[in-house]
Image (cartoon, rainbow, N blue to C red; front, side, top):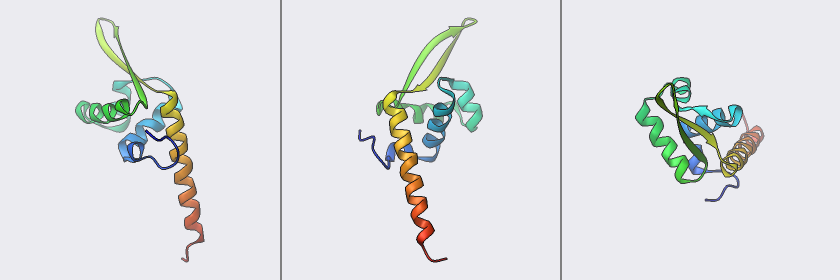
Length: 101
């Protein structure tokens, strides 16, 4: 997957928000992401699967008080792709400054 500039995988609004959370906080519990973005488990799982298949996130499972938990983090490739995408969005937005009002 090309990680330079505009990125169709990351651009979907929910995936963009997931990447933004992960870029800011590092590794985050699945439930925290779900609550922060007001998503159902199934919707969040589908978006994470797309990001995981692109090698942009890594999921880690573990037990906390006998309950299975899933933590999510951006991979190095995911962090690079997210930064490049945000930079491209900024470039696009800046070019709009030159449009007539």
